[in-house]
Length: 356
Image (cartoon, rainbow, N blue to C red):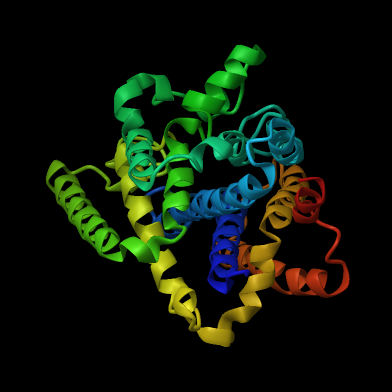
């Protein structure tokens, strides 16, 4: 049975990613890193990727559980599930990179590992995750969350953006994939394990309530620490308690707690036989959630065209940039509804289902 709240979480995650990516390509004039609008945009982006990866981890775990019933430890059956996923996700990543190349006003090099290659890596280890107990998966999540503390400067703390999105040779590419790219396995695989833990979480709701309370307390302490040390609480990159590039331990913990809270709110009473949060009033979000991978690739292609056209052009006024960002974000909702009605078989999601 397809769960409505999962599609809604996917939709919110992908739309937030569209928003923050659009804001990055068409930043308005006069908006600095410390501006409230920039902080709100960064906050939305900071939550979008963890939600997107977590809900993908949820899906990979459920899909691997179903595959185990079919495969029954048959190697070729597992390969027929793994290889198409890795291939399609990697091709999608290359499409995204090529659409938004740095030399055309974009943000990436063509070979840059990103969030989709992270999901490809997660698909590779999916068959292993399903054989771990909940305690083992929870332990793995924590290990990945604290991995920035363990690897230290290997995460590319001092990298310029151009260094983070470039790689020389296979060794360099693997280094970006694992250690210091935009979404390296250390620590971003922690959200894959978090997604596997959210599957069937009602069985351990008391434990999760305690984890959320403890996490919120730690977050409060981090805010107080930032205040007394007079350093920013959160920045996309730089000297702050929470940083996204590279993702530090406090960011992983904070975003993980908020993902669990959002998950629990939107789930409502659906897993117990009731309605998800909002009932049918927000069901219009669901098609975008079911088309999240296709939207992810398509919106970058559109942004790549815009970035190329805006090279060497002056920044837009704040109201113009704001309206264009909102328009580009919201347009994917009616487009996904139209797509589901008229051409539901044409999507990357359908390719994954067909070849897996």
